[in-house]
Image (tube, one colour):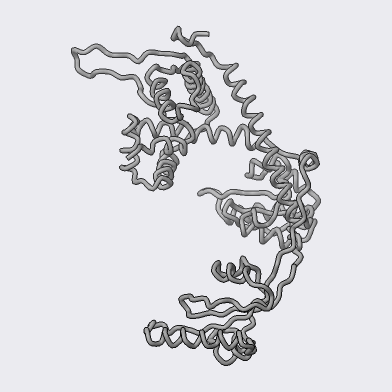
Length: 440
């Protein structure tokens, strides 16, 4: 079986570090030291880990898409240096990952690939990667992810003016097209659940006779009331207006082939034998869906073993009294909110739709009139008080376009900020190439 390692490594974000300093423990054997390629501050990148990465990259990349060997070698070493300076910076600034987080990430990778931990270990071993080395890389990637979240993502914001400018450069969305609706009538001649062959033949003969009478001019409504076991039989077999996507695929295909007033062939299903008639069609205008968005701000207090739910409610109630007395909500949020992403903005959220929020938070926010402050509300994040600043109703297509603009602009800003961050880390780092083939 082909190794699944490339897929595992991709899910782990980057290739696995390998080959630490090796030695022979026997007393009479000399110690074999791994060759140092690059010194990065107070750490080194060894030839062993570099070659492990290089071989892994060669196996992952198709031959036709692989850069020249010289370029690939330089890229791998550059990636190792970039990773190393990020890990070092994270350690200096107190970012760490505990064993439980590493274990959960590894288990998630195994679950995604439908492997047990032992099976994943075996798949890694096929490419010479130990579970210890894999854990090291997972830990590094989790640390880098937290580093990016703290230093990049939380510091990126997108203003309304930027969104408006982005939207002005895009093609306007086409208005929704009218949809065809079909008014349908139906007769069902049921087959007994036991599927007795005699009963099946009797039902087949009965539906054939009904179909023939309909073709000879029998009223469909009268035939439905007399012969159909369908739920709509008392209404003369009328199902009513339906869109094709609302019908079972076989029925939709049959109905779409009919002209108004035309009778369908007999259709067999697990329930029995069916006859349909397309009564008429119509073009129905599709209303553009709307969406309500709210602009709000909040103060979040997270509980701990020492700061209980009751403590949080009491503290927030004090904030409410201070706000009623004239103190600014935003000033309190900046000073006390545990939501670091919004505290600096006075607790203000972007325009949000209720469906994108924690349900308890959304329910409380939606119940507030504009300009009012909630009582303490508990969500899965902690305890909040919420103030609604404004509310608007948008065309859902426009709202989706605005969301896409926000995503695109935020991603672009985050990438640019991350690039600057990495350049700064490397500029400030002491990097010395020891190996002659990489010396600059």
